[in-house]
Image (tube, rainbow, N blue to C red; front, side, top):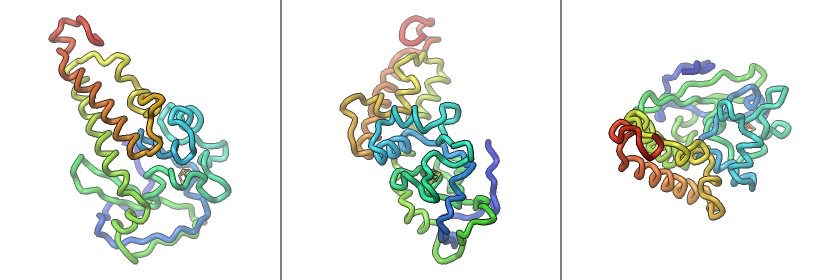
Length: 224
Ligand code: SF4
């Protein structure tokens, strides 16, 4: 697991005292690896008025699914000292300066404080709680889609463990690129879009789960 550059350990819970006043310097948008999930990609695409396919091609590094950075280390979306895609910014940007770690699904999330630039005018305080801070960042909207995508991913892993052939029906574009998977009828509303995307993946998974594994079929048929 990648080690987080923390200046305060992963000891806070949602109930812990915490507040943060952003100084608007933009330094948090330099030299960060901001990875995007299928839901975050959808939100970015809708905020930019582009398809998820185009956002992937233009703004996301295929090596690690993180937002591209310019030569000076700045995020591709940084405009001056402000985020150019504020409404569609990923969860990691909303959580900053906190980092969230959940040891296992269903386990209580813990929060640490990421290292900030020494020149950052941002101020950490105790006027509120971690939970209140996260709520103000609009993070509640991410809970259901994150859980839904995680659930289908767990089903995929189980299928792989039972040696099902998955071939092209469940290729990467099906998982990551909602507009490519949904085609011309993809909803504009990201909430409706992720639900339809997950439903599509669920239907594909159900078909594979109902089919015999490669072992059971002797390696004949399906994606074996
Ligand atoms: S998406 Fe916006 S907030 Fe996040 S790193 Fe890029 S510029 Fe900064």
